[in-house]
Length: 276
Image (cartoon, rainbow, N blue to C red):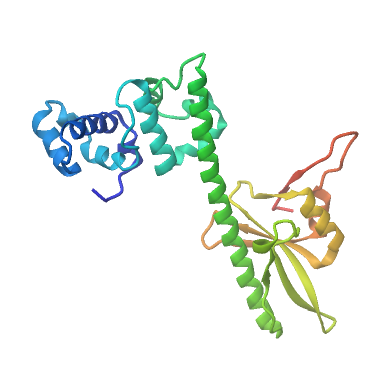
C-alpha cells in the first residue's frame, strides 16, 4: 500500500492493534509478502473486521521491524512513529508541556497516550525520556517549517527589490545575504538612487502569521539597524494571507518600540506590532 493514510486512521487503536497482528503473523510466516500477511489475518482472525489493517500496513513502514509487540512500549513506539514521521498538526502543541498538550486532545486520543503509560503520574524516567525525545523532534519540525516560511519571505523580498531596481534603471541584482551569513544583521542587500547616485539598502526580512500582526527583532538586528540608520529597512510579510502582503518599516518607525536595558537586565528580543 503506497497511498498516504490520514493521521486519524494511523493514530488509533484499530491501527495499532492491526499492526501488532500483522507483525505476529509475519513472524510466523517468514517470507510472506505484507499484502499476503494482511489477507491471512483477514482470513483467520475473528476480530480482523474491527481493525484498520490497511492503515496498519502503512504504519508498518514507519515502525522498525524488530520492535517489541507486547506491553505499553509497543504503543509508545507506534505513537512516536506517527508523531515523528507523519507529523500530525497537533504535534506542534507538544512543546506546551505534557498535561497542557493532553488536555487539548479529544478523549480518544487521550486514551491512546494513557494506554501507552505516557500519562503515568509520577512518570518513570523512561516516560520522561520518551516525552523529551518526541517533543525534541516536534520542535525540530516546527523550526524547519519556520525556516521554510522565512526563506519564502526572503525570496519575495528579492523579487520585490528586483522589480524596483528594474524600474529605476539599476542593472545590479539584490544579494541574498541572509543565505550566506546569519550574523550580518540583515537578509538582503539591495540598491536605490539618492540624489542621482546609487546607494546601498540593507533589508531585514520578517515573515509572520501572528494575529494581531507582529514580528520580532533581535538585539543584534536592532544594533545593526540603528548603526546603519536610514539605509536600513524592515520588510515584514504577512504570510497568513494569499498572496502574502508586504509591510515596509524604517528604523525610525521601529525605534519607539525598542526596549531599554535596566539595572542588570538586558533585552534580547522585542515584539514589534505591525500597526504602527
